[in-house]
Image 1 (cartoon, rainbow, N blue to C red):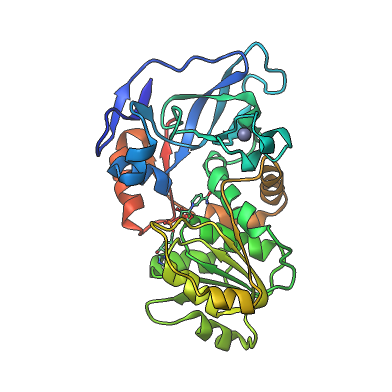
Image 2 (image 1 turned 180 degrees about the vertical axis):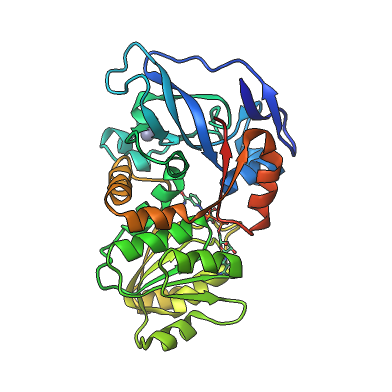
Length: 345
Ligand code: NAD
Ligand code: ZN
């Protein structure tokens, strides 16, 4: 099969021919139809410090996927041959305290698809059946390929009730834009999104943001003034990983504001803890998706609202054939894009 692979430690990737993966008794084998590119894949291609300390080549990359089940292991009873599926890319250990208590998203030993085990940038991928999310047959394959990042956005955005709340999202990457669509869908009053890229702020506006702020020219305080807000945002979603964005957000939260942080900073940074304390701000880190509440919530949002479906679809700006993977990676790295897909069909 074709597989986009990190063959050895160091920069670069190769589309190689390699044997199809074996399907164990508790696994399903999936013919991959679409995959999505994520920042993680760019880090793995570059081979930065994180990649070098995390990955043992050879490794097939990719964790955002949609495909068709072509083989089910002997012990699998609840996933049928021919099912159209996406998948949860964190394979949990099953034995740690959190796993045993049913809090699988808090597993202390998760294995990442396309990071710690062979991933989905290939004609076939194998996953434990418990990680498979069966999709309705009518779902657009492109949409099926973005359930992993849509799950990150859903997990972050639904931390707290949003009805009537004023929401600020820092970072209009694919996940920030999806979060804007969720906030809109879930009943927020105002949704404000910031970024440094005009291209990406246009995507945020199209997905339902009331105001977009280019932080190279304006600040979140300008958005508050424009909207007639006086006391600050109720809910913050940090989706950039940029320390400056966190500072701008904290400066513009209401007292008692709640902030969910998904964006991954490159290194430790300082925060105005005095402000966090005296303004009684709640900060919560978010990793991955809740298994499987997040998957239920996003599936139902996608199934029941054509407005929401259209907003999520609008985040997908590019689709390349698998052979054109290098152009796809260049496009994703340029930032002049939303979500970039690879077509393996
Ligand atoms: P992305 O890198 O495409 O988007 C980040 C955006 O932040 C970019 O558009 C960038 O221009 C913008 N930005 C940079 N500086 C900014 C600033 N000062 N103010 C506002 N915006 C600024 O990433 P994505 O795929 O949308 O993911 C969002 C973030 O979430 C990334 O940091 C990613 O690493 C992280 N992530 C975390 C998890 C998790 O489980 N915690 C999962 C996936 C992604
Ligand atoms: Zn565990």
